Length: 274
Ligand SMILES: O=C[C@H](O)[C@@H](O)CC(=O)C(=O)O
Ligand SMILES: [Zn+2]
Image (cartoon, rainbow, N blue to C red; front, top):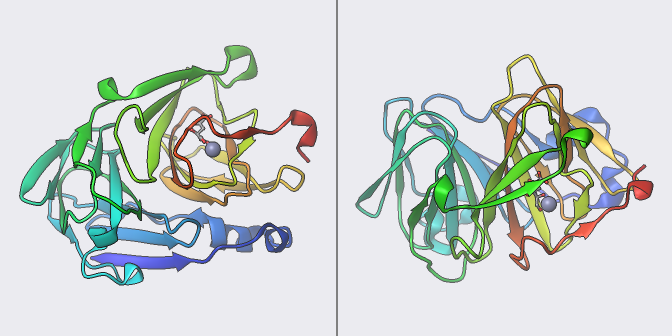
């Protein structure tokens, strides 16, 4: 079963006035990863689609998706899929790809219908594309690893870059995940902005009774959204995106927009945060 929802873009002036419920309605994405369902959220920030497929032993097919208006979802789009569950299978254009936990499949524009099966919990990301790049599997050993932070500041972590210009060519999608060294809980602090690109985070591998306080908003108007395991949050181009967990976790980040240069970000000085 395919379920879709659309989230319109909110400007920073409007966002200042939102209360907790309204902030969550616009930016927080809960209820993903339901057995036997494909759940997609079509965001108007750079038209990124994020979502999930949990085949739970059956076969789930993703083909037409009403918000894109095309016969098949990838007619004018590219896709990245991360498996956060047990080993599963994705079938694209008559080829079967076995995807283990922590591996990423890139699917180029025009691939046609996508079939999910096996025991995977698939996190799906898709952005508009202008040309076809080859569909391919990317394992953690093929990805770029960037070590960041320090134990003293509780932000020691490794950023593992899968859809990155040095690893896998894409039109605009960039994607990977960040893992923590034990005891570190802060992601993306010091914070940054990149008005050229929106971003989405999926928090996972977080114990069910723990939470991540995700920080968003303009640097001088920060707000927090409390995140549980396997929940996602949409980060507008004008917003910081940072989090602190009450326990360790992993998170998948993905971006769409202009300039796929990962390092093209504007750091926010601590004194600017309010
Ligand atoms: O623009 C890049 C993204 O915000 C993330 O890659 C940041 C991140 O994974 C981290 O600092 O832990
Ligand atoms: Zn970022």
